[in-house]
Image (tube, rainbow, N blue to C red; front, side):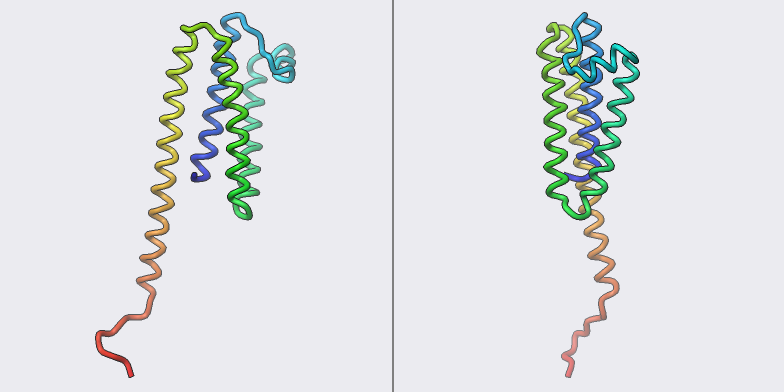
Length: 150
């Protein structure tokens, strides 16, 4: 998975968590995460948005620091944090009424579609860069002659 696609998926999942939280709060439900509940009570929904932006920025920084030396560890890190946010979204879905769930499912389908498109674009760009690197190497290679050297 490309770096941009991985981080985009994480950011989109966090956006889905914010949206599902907002919808759940609109239905009269309560925030179950104690830290987020405290932020919400003391500073309002804007604090939740600011926290999510900070979390995505921290994940981007972690990815930037880890990726060059350990891409596999970075990928597992992103899979883990994606799973945590996905659990939060599913938790919000389970608590909501069916009508709100339909709206959120539509949003999640859009998020998944964007994530797949981002992954495809990054994959294509990485493949294209490898192809261009091979062409540049071929252009700079010494010429081959059809006659035997000797």
